[in-house]
Length: 151
Length: 485
Figure (cartoon, rainbow over the protein chains, first blue to last red):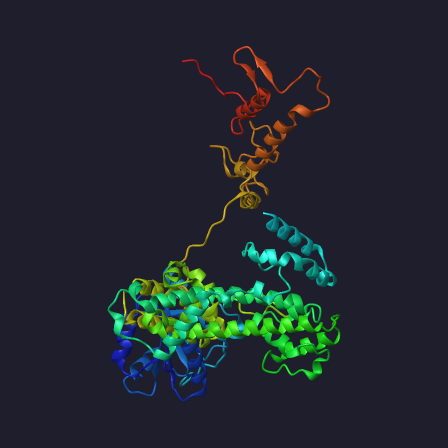
C-alpha cells in the first residue's frame, strides 16, 4: 500500500535487509496489504518513516508469499498485523504487559506511540539490552487473545 | 547698487505682507520695475508682478529660438546614420543634443517661474487651488479653463485632472474666499498660462527629438530603460557624461516627485522612484518587488550609461545583455521557495545534554549534598563496632557519630561553602559601621612590620582560627598509650 515503505516478498530480501541495517532499529511488519488492521498500521508507519529515519528502518513483509512462510513459522505469527523489531541482526523483545514479548501485535493508537516504542527499543539496544520495557501506558497497548493450537 | 538694495528691501516687505496688500504693492513697485529690468536678472522671480515679460525671458532669447529651429529641422530630416564612425563629440548632432538637454532644464526652470507668477496673480481669485493642484502645467491649464468663473459647476475639468481632485476642487471652490479678478490682471494671468503651455510644448518637442536620436547616442541605456526614459534621464542629468558620473542611487531619484498632498494618504504613494518608474520593466514587476527592481534597474542603467559615455559598445549589445540579466533576476525573485520537508527526528541520546552551571545550580545541589553528619555516619573507627539505631548491629549504623573521642553526638549543620563566602563578604562590609566601637578604631590597621594595611587583618585571623579546628581529629582527645623507646 505504501509507496514509501518497501514490501518484501522473498526470503533473500528479508535476510539481506536484516543483515544490512546497521546501528538502526529494523521494523518488520508482517501482514496483508488488504487487511484493514494492517492498512491502519501501514498508514502510521509510512507517515513516521521519515521522522525516525535516522535511527530506524521500516519494511513490510507480505505473509501471503510462499518464501516467507519459513519466517512466519519461526516467529509464530498468527495474528496480523505483527511487528518484529531487530537491531544489528538481533531480535529485540519488548515487554508490554501482554503474553507475547517477541512481537508487537496490532496497530498503534497514534504516530507518537510508535515513535516512542521505537525509541525505547533503540535506547535499550544501544545499552546492550535484549529486552526492553514498553513506554506506553496500558490503555494504549492493543489487547488480544493468543490462540493456542491444540490446547 | 541702489536698485539691488531696493530689491532686497522689497523682498523683505513682501515676505511680511499678506495677500490683501499685494495689489497695492504692485502699484508701488511699478516705479522700480523699469530699473529692475536693467539690473540683476538673477533674483527675477520674487519681484516683478506686473509684467510677464520681465519674469519669463527665455522665449525671447536667441539661444532658445536657435535651438528650437534646429530641432525642428532635424525632426523633419529624420535620423542620420552616416556619421557613426566619428567620435561622438565632433558630431554636430551630438552638440545639438547636448544643447537640447541644457535647454530642457532651462525650460523647466522657466516653467516654475511662470507658475509662481500665475499662482501669485490667481491667489486673489482662488487661493486654495495652488495647494490642490501641484503640477505647474496642470495648474496653468486649470486656471485657463476656470478663468474668472465663480461657479465651478459650469466649468468642465474632465481630462485635465483626476476625478478625485476635480471633486475636491469643486468643493473648495464653493467655499473659497477669493474674489473675481480685475480684467487686466486676468488677461495677464491667461497670457502667462499660454506662455507656460507653449514652453511645455517646446520641451516636449525637444525631448521627442532627443528620444529619436537616443538609439544612436546611448544605445545601451535605451536598450535597458527605453528611449523615452533614457532621454528624460539624460535631460535631467544634463548630458550623457553627467549621467554617467552620477552614482546609481542618484539615477534612481532623477525625476522623483517630491510633494505629498496633505490630507491624502501617503500609504499609496510610491516613494524614491524617479523616471525609472516609467520603464517597461518596472511596470511589469509585481508591486511587492518594485523597490528591489527599481534599485536593480538604476544600477544597471548607470553601468550602461557609463558604457555609452565612452562609446564602448555602439551596437547596444551590452545593454541588451544587461536587460536580459535584469529580467532573469526578477523572475528568480518570483519563484516560490522550495517546499519544506519535515525534518527527521534526531537519534536518541546522540546529542549530549547541555549541563548548566552557576550559582543557582550550586545552591540547588547543596540541598542534596552530603552533609558532615552523614559523612561521619558513613565512616567507622577501626576495631570498634559502631552503634546502630536498633542496637546489636540491626538498623542503621551511626558510624563515627557519637563515638568516644569525638565529644559530640550532635554535629551542627556545617556552613555550606556558599554561605561561608557570603558570610565573609558580609563581615568585611560590616566591619566599619558597628555603633558600639569607639571612635578611635578604624578599618586601617597600623602594624609595625608592614606599615598601613587597608584590610582588617582580624578578619583574616578569624579564618585561620577556624581552619585549625579539625573536624576529624578531636581537640580534647589524647594518645591512648605512649611507650618510651
